[in-house]
Image (cartoon, rainbow, N blue to C red; front, side, top):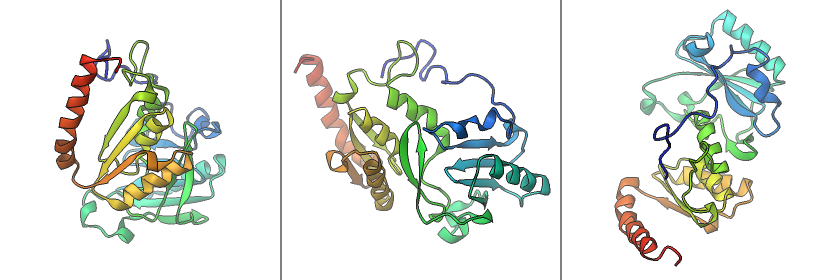
Length: 251
């Protein structure tokens, strides 16, 4: 990856401070037909200490280490109406999540209609399968949206691209791939992906995300196992390929 003149990752795509949560400007993302999954409230940065609210398509997920207060519930009602949300879920933030069961870690419905076991959301024009019944994680880390957009557009800032070569000739190694959202973006540019994860369930979930976006998962690798051990196996192969390309860049 080329180095940015402004540092390893360069400037963020949006350098403007976030407007207050719940204002029309903050919720304009909900009017973007290409994105209906994003963070609406990010704690103190939006004036709500320890409160995090994610819009997940037709549903809101509210997270807090404490029970919701009356003002927070009133705000949730306003957001539900403004965004035409079908159902609102609450999940208690738990730093000891590894000791939790899937049921106890999953959010619970507090307003409106219950979500189906699985549902689709859209981000930057791509589809992802989510679930509010699979424990602590829903299937997509929303704070990585801009990084996924960088891969999808092969652009970080002027003169700083993601791929050194045309994306259609690139191979992307996605370590700890989870549900493979980064790989979906890379695959849509034409890149070949290798996905490593220690969960067969999440790798299968990743294959479904590929299919949702008209990408054949059979053209990509999904490897179950310890990522660090597999990297030891793959690195000699990749090092050999890189050396060969330097000797014969047209080959």
